[in-house]
Length: 375
Ligand SMILES: Cc1cc2nc3c(=O)[nH]c(=O)nc-3n(C[C@H](O)[C@H](O)[C@H](O)COP(=O)(O)OP(=O)(O)OC[C@H]3O[C@@H](n4cnc5c(N)ncnc54)[C@H](O)[C@@H]3O)c2cc1C
Image (cartoon, rainbow, N blue to C red):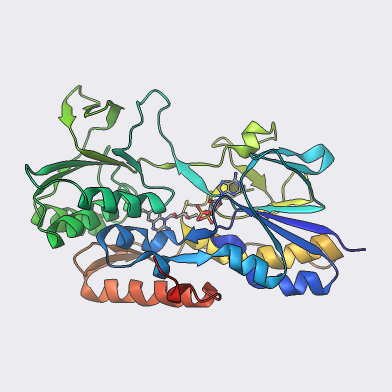
């Protein structure tokens, strides 16, 4: 008898199941996708959305159309809780949705101290669409004194955002003072060569990088660093690391230390075999996965195979993570910094390679004519 598969969140890992909906329907099952928006954005090209290297149609998937054209139901909403004992999902809009098998790819948020007074000039770098909205508000600022912009967080996301902010301001003739507060060190945990190249690239453009300090608190127009120094700002971008979706913890499920859903090598919940997941919102038993989209993308085909196996019976495949992936930072000046297995190189070629890989990835999943849509 047909079963009900519910896909929660249209992140990078659910793109493969979404392009194969026909396979589930052909076997007599019903598929529902729940996502808060009709579009899902590709984070790897997000910083380019800020600088204007890319426009939204190039960077997003129309997941509503993908689902509906494939024959699935699309619900524009988000899951607020999982009643795993009764196999039901509670949606923010009030709907209760039963499932036989559910798969979670609902990503992560920037971890922001709840005591910080949030305002429209504090921009969390996730969801990625925030970067596009920030671009519009910055461009709408009246010309006058130089803008003061602080980027909090010196990881790959913070560096890319900082570098692409520079391009946005530079290309539009807007004078600005950009400061990156890096925490202990810029690109901590990345190869030393990448760190050197990033410091040189940012410094060469007049961007101040503060190391050895963190952003401690943020007020409406100024922020305080860990040594009590204060910086005033017009915009502050928050890129201080991420926190997996809180829905598992909020639902009272057993979670990993960071609140993610613990799964086995089949991407299957350890406690509830009918729950699966991929991307930033899960943690894999026996491994520590970096929170990068690469894992989510690689998990897609495994997730698809194992969802079918859970519905119909069949052999499950294991996700064996490889940590030898390549990362390329878009430095906003048509150059990139590439690193893989401790090796680093910088320049125009890495950027062209990143652009080629990213566009190829988009082409694979932009199956509903996204590029022809208006902004
Ligand atoms: C600026 C920046 C640049 C980055 N660049 C790279 C890069 O170049 N390469 C790389 O590998 N990684 C990069 N990353 C990391 C990358 O963003 C994440 O690892 C990746 O997005 C994780 O993908 P995901 O599929 O888990 O979730 P996401 O892509 O975040 O997708 C989650 C989806 O779930 C939906 N959702 C959320 N909550 C709910 C809910 N409760 N119910 C239903 N739906 C929900 C969201 O709307 C979204 O559609 C970057 C991150 C940032 C911030």
